[in-house]
Length: 233
Length: 388
Image (cartoon, rainbow over the protein chains, first blue to last red):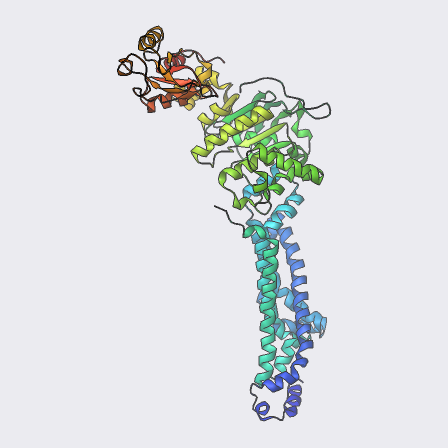
């Protein structure tokens, strides 16, 4: 089916540059609108993946932080999910969740769990012991200590995890069309031999990754002002 | 210092400014261990006094302190705060009533100085205005400029400033009891001495009951109204005011821990104003040298001391300076060291030795000579008993 689609497009091309599968600015200018919908499809897929992945792994990390024995089993399970190739996961899930966004989401989310889980846990573990001791000694309850001291101080690590998870997901989501979830991958593979197509679709994915990475970095700077405050002479 | 006056009540509705604290055979035995970390510790701290827990590492002094606010659970025995067992109270709630300052300070790096200090007031639900006013008041109390420091992060402060913020934070809700675990331990010696003096001055104002942990016997002698010397295994060896500890160590362990120079250490307990100074033979420029010589003959100090119009010391007059008919300003030697009434005797002795001087003029707050301190007076102070 994919091949058929590709052939249809090849037949549509008349210009010499286009029939040579080259890099054709004119064609790109004419067809750029075709990439807008896949771009936003892709963006939503990435956003949902990171949001759901964060919700699950953050919760798991908070639980494992209090009940240390959970760290190993959670790491092992998410580690296995992390190592399953995404394409394989899409096909394994097809009989269960069918074609569509759900399948893509399940596979992509299971891939980011380990990354975020580990970073949240490392962030919490790196909170200085004396800071926790002082907080407890002043009468903060365990929950107050967690939300007012430990989680804020873990933010740099947590945000770093989100950055890795987001950029990785932008790349991996180009394979989501195998599950029928569309996105920029569908455009890339619709005519993989055509340079103009691949450059535009691939370039948009790279841009998205860089932009999202930058946005998260900006957000991190905004919510962790103390990390940049240095001693004044 | 060494005051046993009762705690001050600042108003009819407010709670006492200081609480009494009593350890009653308080014991901590960690699971799986045969030796207790704190062994049936019994001692009473009167309201408004500093009790220093001191001893070698592993003597259980920090454990004993942390049992008070239940950071460590009491295995056996009890600890009473104003007569009420700490075991009857919810730990988090109990801790909000007890100031807590530790060596590593433990400021929250992600919060501004103001937010750090406001931690416990917020937990107790104070209003914004009240918190803001209290924060500024506390920062001033610990000699920090509120405008300059309020909005800074701890990472932007020097070690000494951080320490002050830590103390301000511990004092935020005016707790009747403070726990301080080596609060000046990580500060360099010069700043440590300054912070100690500042804290003692502060304590004269706030009169809190304080449990102060240190491994440094000199710090214990300086800070403590009472000193509890502990030994490995969490045993209390002696509990007494510093002077008594230095004069009558209860056993060889205490004697050894206090040190062979305990006689010298006693000089740290007295100030220049506490001893009988010699009368200084004071002369002014233009006086007859015969009169000056006569003054020196009548005094215990063999040389006349030249002073200016306001009574400030200019220098000693030697035989050469007394050779002419009248006293002139030129022929004098420096008056150093000039000592102050508030100097502790140990510092005064070290100043005298440093200047290789036998005598030092003592001045009051206005800089006027009020007497002379000599090595002889210090030697006498060493031999005599310190009022306990």
